[in-house]
Image (cartoon, rainbow over all chains, first blue to last red):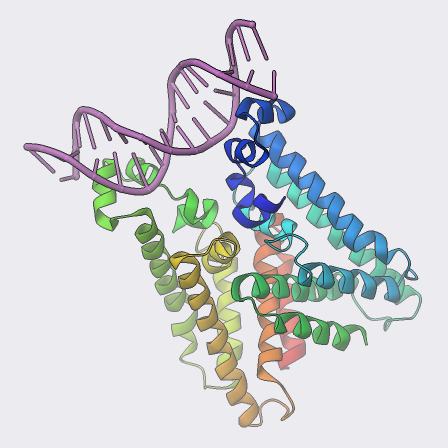
Length: 177
Length: 177
DNA sequence: CCTACCGATCGGTAGG
DNA sequence: CCTACCGATCGGTAGG
């Protein structure tokens, strides 16, 4: 996950892993069976980490607006804490594979959609509970919210600009109160 | 530019270019002198294209709010028109190189900052001309605006979701009127 | 611009 | 899990 978050899922080579773990290449290889399976396994582990760090802690918050706020706050904290050295694994993998059809791209897209749907579920609930105005469009709201977190990740990774997290929080507060 | 926008600046290999142009590898190589120089030259060409497609046409608009709107509209149109098959070159290169220190990363970051500064210049001008409320913070406004365009690019590239362009335009209109 | 080559590394395999 | 290897490809060089 660490190598892939910095150098991409293509940069995660079997030889590099073998060196890192002081094993032979074939020793690593046999654990996965192919480069693609290694990439898929790494994505799956990264998603487990993401659920553990971001989604599960938000389960303590009431479904609806509180949960939505908690998901976004946990995500920003997760990025800010440098849990992975290259920032958000899913964003990086998405940018890397959006032009490369195949199983990895499909898995990345599915995981990314899953996160978006979870946000949208909470946004709908918040609206239906009257915590957000009745004319709020969940898809539009989630587009804007996820734009802020994605942008904060990109600005932090490319410029090292930590102010991006404050700006993302400010923007989120403007939308959600 | 086309290869790099789809497969990254690392995926743009000298051998691949040689095949594509029906030349020998060394014939391609001698034009650049190193892989890194090829990457930098490709980035430079992509930035020239970006200026031509997005920035120069906006010069017809009055500096300030009109120019800011034109820059964002041209950018979204540029993404939507599939000018490069992999979408925004700079976004892709930023995600690819944000974890790889070196000259390419520095050049990508500089180009990306340049675009942000141009947006901020127009936002400041708009505020100073009274086209935007006096309490608008240009950096915060540009963070949100560029978040929308970046997110539209990512959603279109990964999901093929063209509705993202409409959502970005809706969000921009909410902010700029 | 070419052919012919270099050492390194890639994903993957054979055989133990 | 290992050693030893495969063909392909990488960036780059020598020499013309």
